[in-house]
Length: 506
Image 1 (cartoon, one colour):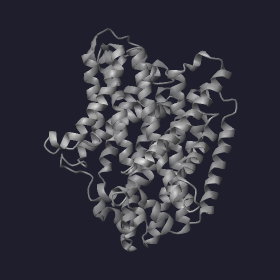
Image 2: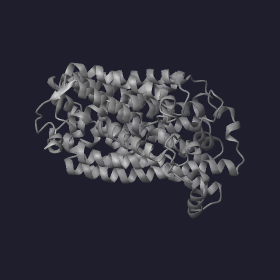
Image 3: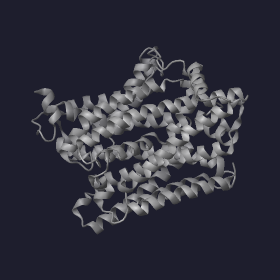
Image 4: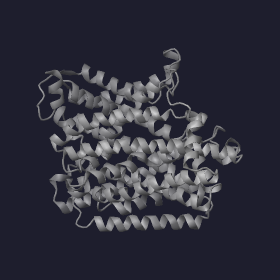
């Protein structure tokens, strides 16, 4: 695939996004930037959230890791379903009752100033790292298939990619993103379905033949692994998926910001229900695509582990590169075009939303932007938007220098450490009547990830071969919860702030 063709695709794609932004950002205010004036249709939010929650990690890493993990990822997906049920029935009612813009203001009402700022800080840290990892993936793919051939440095690729996101989001914020993410989700879903169909055409298989190939492949033989010491152990992944969802969605300003743009709680819950069903189906598509990619390589006699450009620093196959490599070198030109459009769509749908959520949280939680006139608010949020654009660029360049694992693992590893304190804070607030000593909360939330890291590094030696994987998030949250208990006392909690705790202890 020629670099000029790919550049033309990227340019055309961003022209469409900028046109959408211009049409939807007229007379933008802080209310439209942060919560889309709270009048977004629930079905539009549900569809837009698909692209936001998946990202380029799903598009590239999930199909690639089928080789080593088979369909074990489905354990996490089923855990996601349980997590979304908790969000719809526990967290959304609380957020709507309190009429929140930033979900972390709950922590101030429940615990105090320092708890509030700690929660908001951990979100900023978590989302900045997660968004940077996702952008790193797509920038790396574009670097390999386009810019490396043109002699463009990786730093330039990253900088231009993220500045393009800034260009179409800095004015309209969430109001614009709901429309651009709807477009990008549609593009992504079409691309993955077309990719599967094109592989079937290359292998002379119809749709029925594709289904049979996936069902009979050893790579999809099972998703239920029963060895508790195995990182693919089903219940370990299920629990990790459930708590990752509760934290990375329910306690995350990014995706909750979209939910809070719905007209009312009932619409937000309908959005969550249909979004969950669609997400399960989409993940099944990605896992099936992974099986078909390796089947294609086998039939065509492509020794993936013998290709130098596909190996990581340790000489092992980098499964993140399998789909990009096959799509751009062994598939038809049309299939390569479909792949490029798909990965751009899904990655930027996630990244633009993350950038807006970072701006929202910082402006609301740290700048207290509502106390200023609208003109001043506009200047402040656009400056914050640009600042976080720069932060993402810096994190990506650091990760580029340090990375030695696939991105899906890196994302969940980071989430296990950075979202754990949020899980502990909200669990403690919702399910106890105790109030911790507010000034000690930041210390507890810093110590918990450090202790978790020590447990992860020594788990095999300390616990008879048991290795802590993605479920580190649960241990991190539990340690935070225990620490909060130690520095707390029993206190009355207002019904408006903590209705669920009232019901549980009554």
